[in-house]
Structures are given as structure tokens and as C-alpha cells.
Amino acid sequence: MKQASVNGITNGRAKDRRAKTISTPDVERRLNRVEEAAEYMRVSATKMRQLGWSREIPYIQERSGTLMFFDQADLNRWIDAHKKSA
Image 1 (cartoon, rainbow, N blue to C red):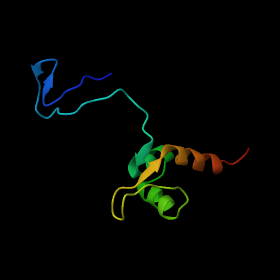
Image 2: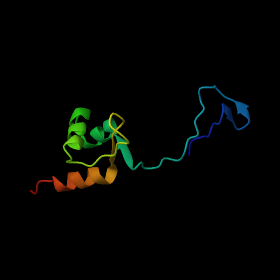
Image 3: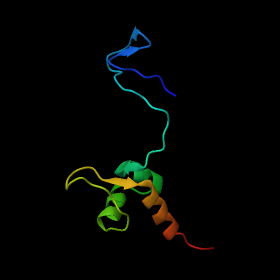
Image 4: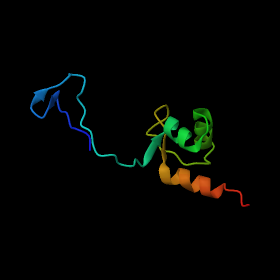
């Protein structure tokens, strides 16, 4: 587990003011940004967006023009559906 830092104070000592994050244990994320999903799928970010826009892979977007997120389970389902048998 990483050390927590709140308002630049860690274990009672002053730290660099830029370190204002609270870190958590490494937790597998369910939602991936376009770039993260593209890296996982080994395609370009443009191709990842196209897969979402064409409805081949479901995506989450709060409203038009905002970030797209892909559910890890949907990415895995798409991979399984597109496997070629030997």
C-alpha cells in the first residue's frame, strides 16, 4: 500500500505541496479511458473510438463531447467473441 498524503502532511511531517493525493491500494479498475482501453486491446485510440461509435463495443459517456469510458468486462467479451478457432 502506498503512503497517504493529505494537504501536504504525511505522518506528521510537511511534504511537498504538490503531493495532495490520497493513494489507495492497487485496485483493478472497471472503467477504462479510451487510451487505456486501446492499449489493452492493442489498437489505436482512434480505432477504439470507432469501435464505440459503431456500437461494436458499448461505452459510457455522460454527454456528447465528454470522455468515453469502456467497461473492462465489455472489452473481454468482445475479445472472446472475435477469437478465431485453430
